[in-house]
Image 1 (cartoon, rainbow, N blue to C red):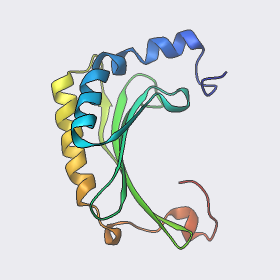
Image 2 (image 1 turned 90 degrees about the vertical axis):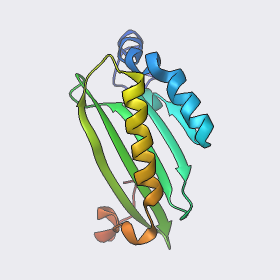
Image 3 (image 1 turned 120 degrees about the horizontal axis):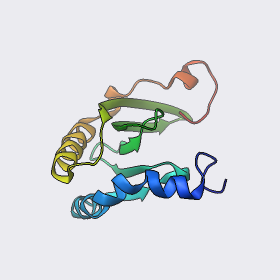
Image 4 (image 1 turned 30 degrees about the horizontal axis):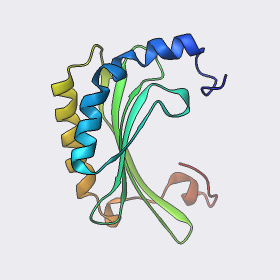
Length: 139
């Protein structure tokens, strides 16, 4: 399927409803902080915020549907590529988030995630598992 082979178009429209319900709140926050936003990348129900922090680390916050398709996860990632190798930190901050979302609560969680990502420095980022094995790929 054109949307990433995960859902039919009708299924995708249904699955994105919880995020679409708070999309404006996420967009307004992202705009106020100068963050880039992406929604439903590769046909998966998610909201993603990206930026480069003051330590020149690429940061991402993602609110996305869990693989179980019954709950959502709030995750962060921070990475930097140096000399062809990726150094990366990733973690789930919240699991098993249920819908409908409370926009105020989700935005508070996103704000806390941004503070954590903004604190990441190169020294905080371990070498990616793929680069530890000597092969380069997407982490």
